[in-house]
Length: 187
Image 1: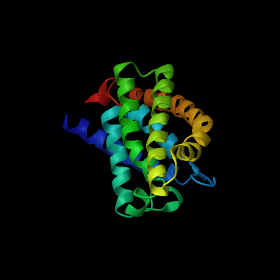
Image 2: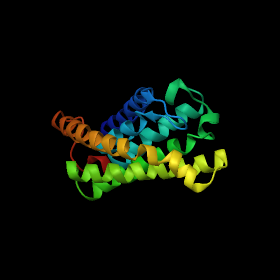
Image 3: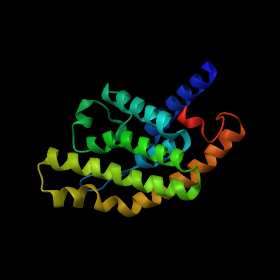
Image 4: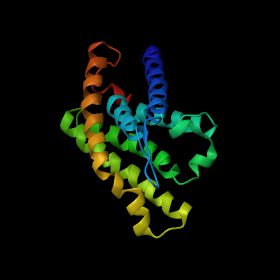
């Protein structure tokens, strides 16, 4: 039991590191860039489930909050979390939880993973748009136009990719006994 818990904690730390690496993949846009962060969130939740996926995202956010360069463009610090992109970062935590929980309550199949990751995409975009609205003091329509609309198509693509890769990696981790079973993420 203790080894199992340690394994999950190590996997959470590894996925926090994967988050940091994929966060450096950036396509600049005028207001908010497209990043590999949301792909990493989807992968993390699809593979680890709600509890440890959320833990991985909390670790990632805390590492960035203390100033480690884990956010996009190798940035970190509280100023990022209270800035125009901070809402997305905070949204990642709830996204990981809801995505993982959806899969645990249904099943870890490709179809369910796509549904869960698309739901997660909307959670992230909602958090991001809300903070963008208040930080930049712009109307709701502009916050949505800059904070959500440009990311819908690429968000669906990333949701599908996270699902395809995540389900396959999860199956491999179970086959190699790094994960015990399909239900092990809820422990």
